[in-house]
Image 1 (cartoon, rainbow, N blue to C red):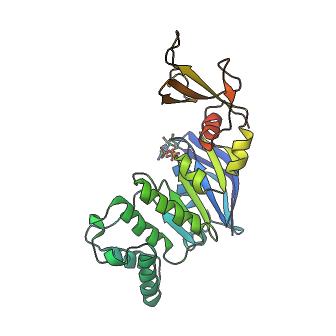
Image 2 (image 1 turned 135 degrees about the vertical axis):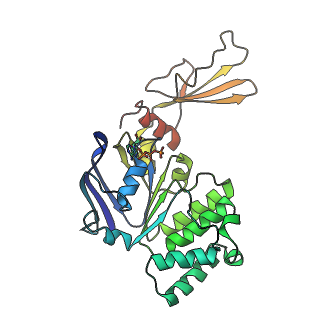
Image 3 (image 1 turned 120 degrees about the vertical axis):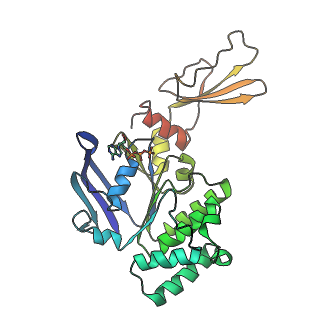
Length: 294
Ligand SMILES: Nc1ncnc2c1ncn2[C@@H]1O[C@H](COP(=O)(O)OP(=O)(O)OP(=O)(O)O)[C@@H](O)[C@H]1O
C-alpha cells in the first residue's frame, strides 16, 4: 500500500500554510512527521485523515485520490488523536462497541475484535470500568484499540505520547513499531526521541516545507561535521556559558568540574572543541535552525 502526496497546497483565507508538498509513503514503514509548533503537521494530518480539503493537490492511496473520494481513506484508516475522546458514561467495552458501530462493523465481528483488542492491550480486566476513571496511558490504550477496530491498513497518530509517563510512552512506541511491520504508520510528533526509537523514515516539516525525507540514519550522516563538543572549566578566569536563547543550537551539561557544551555549528566556536557524532535531535535542530544545510 502506498500513499502519495502530490503538489499539496493549503491556504486559510489568504494565508498559505504550505504549497506544493510532495512525499511518497509506503507500508511496512513507521514515518515520523517531525516539526516545531506551527509547522503545519496538524493541518497535513487533517487533510490525510479527510477532515479537511486542501486548496490544491492530490493525495493518492494505491492510485486512488482520497480528496475526491474520502471514503477510500476512511475505510482503511486508523486514527489516534493526541487525546482520545470518550463519553463519561461509557465503559471501555461500551466505547469500543460504539466506535465499531460507527465504523459499520457487524455484531459478530465487533464482539470478536473488541474482546481480542481488550486482551491485546491489557484492558481485559478493566473493560467493564468507566473510561473517565482511567489514567492517561490506559485511556490512550483504549484509543489504540478503537483505532485498530476493523483492521485499518493506514495508521495516523497525532502527537499521541503527549502527557504519557515513560512506561506508557514505551508501550505506545512498541505497539506502533509492531504495527509498522505490515501497516503504513505516520506518527506526528515533536518528540525526537520517539522518532529515533522507532521510525524507519523521517519527514521533517518547517513552515509548511518538507526539509528532509529519508531515513533517520541518513539525516544523522548528512549532519556529520556540524556538532562540536567542548568544556568550560569552572575555575577558568572568563567563565562564560553561552546564552541558550541567543544560541538555541547548544546543549549544556553540568559536570563537577565545569560545564560540557555541545554546539551545532558549521565551524568550531572554541579552540579546544572537538568534532563529535550528531544525535538525531541535533541533526533535527540543526536543520530546523538553518545551521545544517542538506
Ligand atoms: N483554522 C485555521 N485558520 C487559520 N490558520 C490556521 C488554522 N489552523 C492552523 N492555522 C495556522 O496554520 C499553521 C500551522 O498550524 P498547525 O496546527 O498545522 O501546525 P502544527 O505543526 O500542528 O503545530 P503544533 O505542533 O503546535 O500543533 C499555524 O501558523 C497556525 O496558526
